[in-house]
Every structure is written in C-alpha cells, then in structure tokens.
Length: 440
Image 1 (cartoon, rainbow, N blue to C red):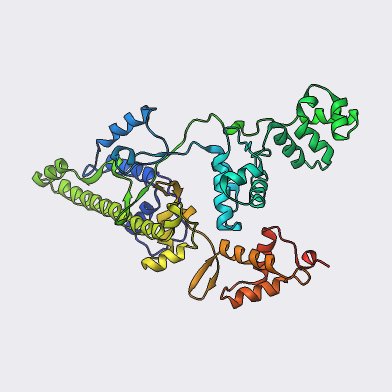
Image 2 (image 1 turned 90 degrees about the horizontal axis):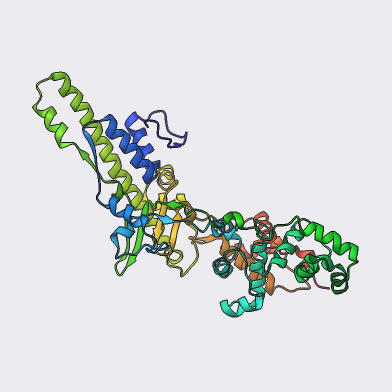
C-alpha cells in the first residue's frame, strides 16, 4: 500500500475487493509499519488526519536519559509503558535461538534459562557443575547435561569455565580427540604459552615436539569467541502489545497510542461542506469515505489483535509469569477458540511483539507444536519426551523396550503418536536403541 512493504501472503482469493485486500494488509503490519502507512495516507488524503500525541516528547526525553531502568515496563509509569523494550543482550538471544526447547523437559528448560542468565560478559560460566548444582538446587547430572547443551552451541567455546577450557572446547570442535592434548590446553595453558614444552610434556604425557605443535594450533584459536556480541549498541523493539497482570486478570493494551489518534480533519470537512463546487464536493465524498474506511480498518486491527493476544496470554499465563512452561498451542487452536480463520490469526501475529513483566516476546514464539493428543487434551512435545525418558529409565535393563513398545504404551495412555516419531524423539534425547541399551 503506497509503497509500504507488507509481505502479504499470496493466498488471497481473487474474489476479494480492493478494500478487503487493504484491510488484510493493515492487519499484517507491525505498529511501526502501520504508522508509516498512516503517514502516507495523511499525505495523500487531506480529509484524513493523524493527530500527534504529546507522549512522543516524553519518550524522547526518556531515551536520552541513562538513569532510567532498561528492562521491565512498570505498570505505574505510563511514560515507561509506552516505550520500546531494549534487546541489547545479543549473546543470550543468539544462544536462546539455537536451543531446541521442545526437546527438553520443563525442568531442563528452566535450568537452561538459569544457566543462560549466569553467563558473564565474556559468555563464560566460571563455576563448576557441582557449584552450579548447589546454587541452583538441581542434580549434578542435570547441570552437566545442560552444560553440554550450551557448550554445543555457536560460537564454540561458550559457557566454558576458563580461557583454557574455552580453547579446549574449540579444539575439540575441530575434531581433536587426543585427551592428553585437550587436557594440556585446558590445564597447562600458561606453561604452553610461555614455551615450557618440557613441563607440559611431563604433566600431560606428551612429547615436547607435540606440545610445541599444540601451541601453534592454539594460537589460531579465539580466546574470546563472544567478542562480536559485546559492546554492541542497543537495539530497540517496539512492542505491539503490552500485557499486565492485576487482581482482576490480564489487561491487554495495543501499544499504538504513541503514534497519535486517527480521525477526519475538521478543517477540510468544513471547507468541503461550505463549498458549492460540485467537483470539489464529489472529490470530498470519495476521500472522506476512504478516510472512514482506513479508520475502521485501524479499529478492526486493534480489536482482532487484542482478541488474539488475550487468547494467547490466557493459555500461556504460567510461562509469562515465570511459573510454568509453554503449553501446546497453535494458530489452529486460536482460530477455533475465536471462530476466526487461521489465515487471519496468522496475519495478526506475524512480526508482532508482546511486552510483559517477564520480557519482550515475539507472539509466534508463544505458540508451540502439539506432539500428540491424550483424550480431548493436546499433549506437548516436552511432556511426551518426559514420559519417554521416564519409561526408559524404569525399564528392565536386560530386556529394554523397543520403539514399538514405547509407542504402544503411549497409545495406551491416550497419546496418539507414531513409532517413527518415538524413534525421532529418542534420538533427539541422545538415548540409544533397544539393542545398545541391553545389559547382559
């Protein structure tokens, strides 16, 4: 519309008229894109008016101040509520995006989130697994498994305990399997760097020539692999919706007040009404009708977005309050609950962000895949994984369960799932097949 890139899907029916197409286009737009489109409409149509909001000046003053908080949106501060949530933690966001969250149980998800928050500015976790287990309250083996997940992410060397450990992880990622060489990099880095090859050889069981060659390889590694994510200028995401929990439930607010309100221009409407020129009056009738249509589209967009977000927030309340994990919920579920077409729901959430006390989330991130069904209840992937893990832990080690048996047990529990999916989930958890698990 007027040159604004809206990325409208190609599934629009040919039978839609121009106004219906424009209405759907407006639904797809983010708040900032909508503001740009309305500015162009104002330039093209003198009868359409986008009235400025005084809050803009307050926002500019807030952005210039470094003394304000930069993470949460306080309910009692209306000015702060209108502002964008900064997304300046590039490293954690980068790592978060690489984790297959559905492949982990709720406890594992919470532990991974805790460990991500424990990373220092260089992306290291200087505490040992035992120390982390003591401070988080999780079992050591769970912490060790979570650390393996983090240390398997990019960039190689993240979540290391020390610089030596960081370089060791990078060397291992390159295919080095010699335990003595890996131990030398982790535990004797200072001796190696100072050229004390005899000392390194004696401590780690290497030949001095091997230690010298190892130093050459270490010099090619990066002691600070997360440098690219440090000292970056803050990027701001303007949330399209703000959700706040109070005693009466959730308040859902469409965050578009900052761009002003839309309406008809009293000045030009009065001028057209007083004119006797038939061409001017005909022009005014068309432009006023289109302005009213745009205004109605803005209101319809607000109403649709509010309904969709309220539906999502009610379903994912536990996750948004930090007291639970994401529940199985899809675009189809929302469409069914709201008696709305799936494509309408998809356009409503596309590229939109929700701000709540826990943080700023893409709406699409709050929707999760459904792994199966248990009676009339959908079962999420994480729950199915947890059931499978528990079954395998409790199985007879001399006669372990096959994928077909696990599938049959889950089916008996009311979870509809295929054997192929069971095998896929088992491999995803790093669990060997039946024959490899058998203990003679």
